[in-house]
Length: 298
Image (cartoon, rainbow, N blue to C red):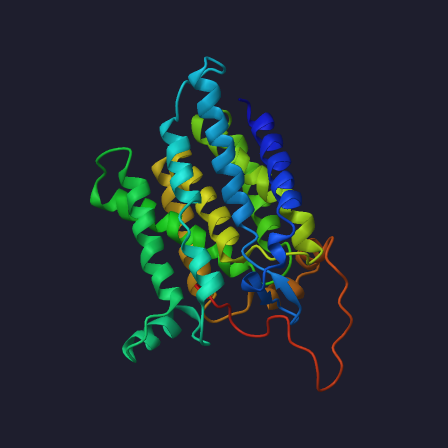
């Protein structure tokens, strides 16, 4: 399966699930308030998970009857499946309580004897990242740590960017473009394509505020891209990428990505492209879009 075909299959499949499951989205259990206090179904990223699972199941069936060039899952596809089906973000989407935000907020809650869903996601996400990079075989301590941090930080950055409609998907697609050129038709390139095709298929719904990706989708997009970097690039690229991601995650504790984006003309234009126009807030009312620091691991 070529990268382009895999992208298109991902896009078509996610649209099928989106249409077929539209009544499920109206469940009160999935309803959350977005950045401007509008009630929307969350955990839209579940459609990405369902899409990748369905495509890989289809590939396996076709391979078993002799259709296609591979009769079973490749290592890259198996790893991508594991990254996608780690439902850590779903726990935070559906069970998060309280106002603890950021690494410091979750650690402060722990000192007070409370374990937040964000902390569970932090610990679980780190464990998933370690398992992913350890699976191909023995790695030195430094390599394992760098690669695991890269995946975990990429997943969390996806969440950090999910503060406005379409932002995580747009950033993910922008990051995917050069990465796709680097990894080409390698097994990880074929494995990543349906994930990004599915993300593209949800972009319109996200922009028009018909659903929210939630941590379920934002974490998956980030983790999938991070895994592709780990499996598709050399050690120098991985180290540099990890350091950039680390800097972005640390910076998010102190500054607002939304404020930075709004202050730069071309970033603001890209960020708002296709989004529902929001009237200026009335004095004494409304809700700020994102006036403070980012809130990783909500």
